[in-house]
Image (tube, rainbow, N blue to C red; front, side, top):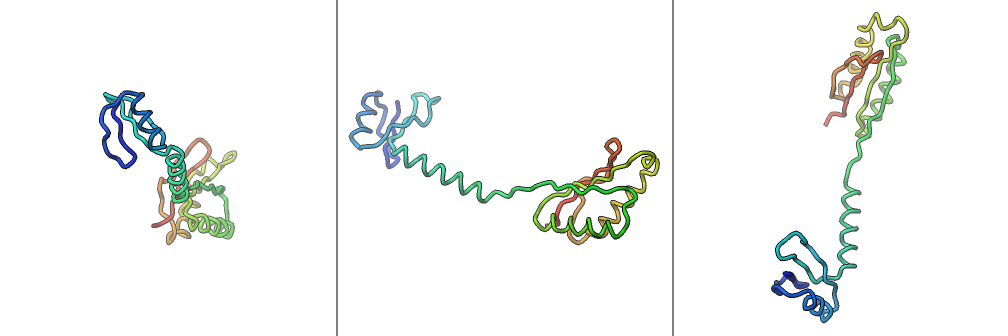
Amino acid sequence: MRVIGPEGEQLGILSKDEALKAAEEIGLDLVEVASNADPPVCRIMDYGKFKYQQSKKAQIARKKQKIILVKEIKLRPKTDIHDLEVKAKHARRFLEEGNKIKVTVRYRGREIVHANRGQIVLNKLMELLEDAAVVESNAKMEGRTMVMVITPKT
């Protein structure tokens, strides 16, 4: 197996026993780095310290990642302007937090005959949010529900 020293220097191709003896003399561990290589590559290192550094890197990566949630706002085709303003206020707060919003207009009974009313409600909502939101996917019917997804402006 090919052995790499603790400072990254090549120690050459050694047998397993010789590599273990070399690692023991230094007081470190022999860790297999690339088992698929020909010959396999091993490195002499402090494995506990290596695992600690890996966990710290993963912790920093998790801290830096941004989680985007999809919030949902439910409306009806008969939603009045004042109620729409309240919903827009909630939507604005969600957008400021950096979340996407799924706006749904649910039709019940014979309301489905007037599907254009839902489109009008969604257009009014977008007028109220035009400074803070962008339409990601336009309104489309999914059964008895009209769905639109909006995202924050960047």
